[in-house]
Length: 289
Image: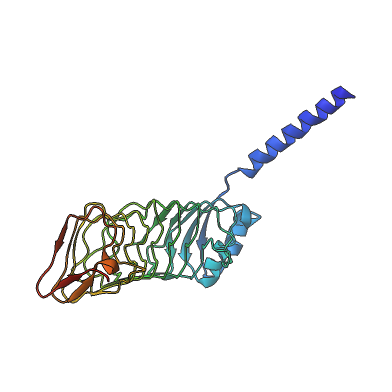
């Protein structure tokens, strides 16, 4: 009887081991869309069920129905859409938020369509496994909170944000603590509330075209050794609760004459690396009462 039990135990362990191998099988699929809206059908022709696909390459024109199919691919890890044609990525598509309907939470790497012009609000927010997103050069618009709390996001595979982007919206890269630095190019006019809060980056000074910076935009951001020069006419919207540069590692900051009164607590508290503040008359630096 004991030998029989041992034999059954070994058999059970063997079966579980094989199930583990099967569960880890990589399913690689490439599809070319002859007609938009048929992504699910085309994947199914290559592999059934589509939820087992781990590596997918798509070419051809995509519509919202095709994007919706992607968020249901529960096993997908690697997604290459660089050859697909689409101008807009829907809101919350790959969001890891409990309020989102996305199930593609094993996604590690995404190559977005080269034709893409807009990434929707919360598109990748709170996605915990995502490490790489390939941003296309034609991109013109980022949605609010698009990448917030992507804890393991490391690389957007760009040196500079695309030139078409004029606004970096609210919370866009907040809490992306592993993200590699990139440049904010000339032409960007507005950086929204909390846009880079607790973000690992910075690589260069702010653009001279910048005329609006929201509350907490760079709070606790990795701006190691950066000399910040603020342009004439820039509007700073910091507050004591959400200082613009609070706890960041900037080296120096130069204020324009168009800022007439600066409350220390509103902009630069706890900047321990700050060595120089440059003021132009009639600017006044004020401490909070």
